[in-house]
Every structure is written in C-alpha cells, then in structure tokens.
Amino acid sequence: MTDDVLLVHGGNPLEGEIQIRGAKNLVPKAMVAALLGQGPSRLRNVPDIRDVKVVRGLLQLHGVTVRTGDEDGELILDPSHVESANVADIDAHAGSSRIPILFCGPLLHRLGHAFIPGLGGCDIGGRPVDFHFEVLRQFGATIEKHPQGTYLVAAQRLRGTKIELPYPSVGATEQVLLTAVLAEGVTELRNAAIEPEIVDLICVLQKMGAIISLGTDRTILVTGVDELDGYTHRALPDRLEAASWACAALATKGDIYVRGAEQIPMMTFLNTFRKVGGAYEIDDAGIRFWHPGGELKAIALETDVHPGFQTDWQQPLVVALTQAAGLSIVHETVYESRLGFTGALNQMGAHIQLYSECLGGTPCRFGARNFKHSAVVSGPSKLMGGELVIPDLRGGFSYLIAALAAEGTSTVHGIDLINRGYENFMDKLRDLGAHIELPSAAEVAEVQLTA
Image 1 (cartoon, helix red, strand yellow):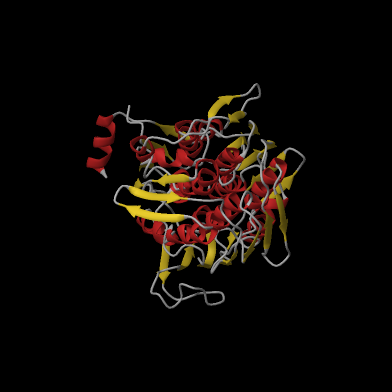
Image 2: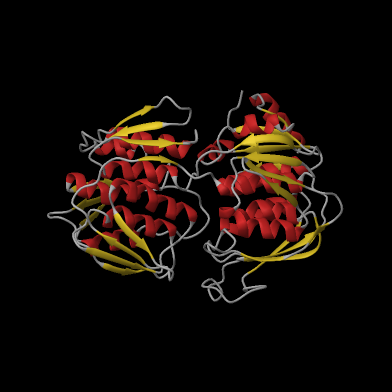
C-alpha cells in the first residue's frame, strides 16, 4: 500500500458523529511548558497527532520522562532530570515542526543554553523566526547562528523586559510567555495575541505558579517567579478541527455531529457559517453542523487575529463557498500565501480569481506588497475529481473536502501532512461514510496515466 496517497471517491454526503480532542495549537506548547516545572505535569485530552509526537521526542532527548496516564489521551511529563541533548539528535527533528523554537526560553532557564535546528512547518507565508531570537536577546540571551542551527546562551538569569509586537503573532506571544514566567522582574507585552489557545496556555502557566495578567488592550503583564511546579490540565478542544468538519458537512450537503466542540471559542465561525446558509445546533457535549438544503449564500469574508475570523478557518470554508450562489469575496490578512491552494480547486472546476489588492475590507499589511491575498469565488461550481498534491495542513484537509464534494475519484498526494493536526482523520472519514482507500503503487500509476 502507498501510505502517503489517498484515493477519494466523492459525491456522497458525510453523515454521522466524530470526536475532537485537545487543540493542536495548545497541546504541544503546554508540553513545552512542562520543562519549566520542578515536578511532573499531567496533560489531558491530548490528540494523537504528529506535532505531539515531535515534541514528545524533543522532550525525551532533553531528559524529560514522558509516559501515558491512566486516562485515554493523558500524558505525564516529568522534567526532574533535564539535560543537554545531542546536537545531531535534535537536528534529526529539523524541518518536521516549528515548535522547537519555543524550547528556547525554558531551556535557557533550566540549562543556561539551548540549540535550535532549522525549522519546518507549513509553507503559507512569512513566519520569520528572527523576531523570536530578538525577543530572547531583549531578555538577556546571547545568540550565535551557525550553519546547523542557532545556539543560545544565558550567562545569568534572564531579565524581564518591555516588548511591543508589530503584529499580534501567536508564536511570538507564546515565546514571551514561556520565557517571562521565570525571568527576573516584570515583563510587559503589548499587542499580544489573545487567541483561546493563548489564554489556555496562560491558564497552564498560572497553575504552575506563574503570575500573569491579561489586559483588555492586548497587553500582558508577567511578574517573574523564582520557581514553578508541575500542572494538571485538560486541554481546550480544537476549534480549528471542529470548523474543518463543519465545512465538510456544508460542502458535501452532509450532517456531522462534532463531539467536543464548544460554542464560545467558535462564535465568529458560527456566525459566518450561518450567514453562508449552514445550520448548527449546540448542546452540552458538542455541536451538530449540517446543510439544511437549498442554495448556499455568497459572502464577503476577511480573516483576522482573534476575535476575528481565524485564518485556519478560511481554506475549508473557501471549498464550501465554491458551492454558494453568487460572488464571494475573501480577504486573507494573516498569511500572504494562504490562498495559493485555490489553483488546484480551479482545476477541479471551481472559479476562483486571486488579486493582490485588498478586496472587500480595510487595507492590510499585504496590500502594497504584490501578494495575491484576496480571492473572488464564483459559484456554485460543479467539482470533478482530480490529482491533488497537499501544500499545507489546512489546505490539505480542504483538498479532502473538495475531493469528497466532487464527482468521480481524486488522487490526493501527501496525506501524511494532515496527521500533523487531525487525529485519526481517515478513520473519522470512514465513520462518516466517506469512500476512501489507500491504493497500491500500481493503482496510483494507473490513475496518473488516465488523468
């Protein structure tokens, strides 16, 4: 069998129930936070995704004992014997995730030094790590760049500082939080990201003994403490995965109950879902999403940092918008290259035109830089199966949605990337009635010849 290729036979609605667990954008960061404690931490609702496995491997390289707990989806992380890791072993993880950059602050506190290899992650636009290093310099770290990676040294205890982010970056905010909690004095962070996953990370750190206050104006104040302990925490559910399944229900004219989904972190998405013509019903255990029949409605949409419409919701929703009547306008303001995935949708029969202008909203930071970051989606379009190569995590799941909504068979290459953020997605698809199969190499070659 060819494990990185999936044959998707489309044209059938997805119907049934699936379960989501802890957020991909919180769980690996909470695992890194365990490095800061003097005692063991207990993290619950952990999904079985690749980013978790990468961080688990990196923690173990640094002497952290990681084992499963009695509860399904529970990890116990014991940092009692943190140690330096072999550079070659760390480098083996290079390119598999961007999480290693967040090890810097905790390792500087625990060991006085850190090594960060080259970083990977999804190719959806500029995600510079230099700003992370500049933040660490402000805390007092010395940084040297070498061909194999970056070495960081803290000759003495890191010191609190004042930082104002040029953009409310989630990664930069996480970096400051994980570094400031044990730094001497007070750290003031302005223009911080305030996503639900950030707030949940603050909850984790507060349970460990940190002193963190979140202001109403995107300002975070952290008073450094001398020591942190372990934590016990249940990760908030993955609102980004929940929205992906909601869009799958809409695009395939299906009906999916997402057990574990919560209303408050998804309020902005739910409003947009209803405007498009989707229906949902909320109870104490999850949210049911379905296509109520009739035509979907075209909308104007602009992505933004929380509490705006999240950029990770955009790609799956664009697939659903190909089935809406009229012209939808999508303005992506977070990642300049996130609309690049639409070329493959056009090959399947969609009608999507990209523009470098800021359409349908206020001018953004990409407006004068010639990035095609706005789209006009004309629908409804009849999608046909095609040959798809997954470009990034959210774009990859969006391709699966398109293939499931299309008539005929699609060959989707690079599905392993989806394992970064979607737990057991193939089993979930089968549970919802999707017709998918892992083909043999000969079958893949045959499909490519007839395509």
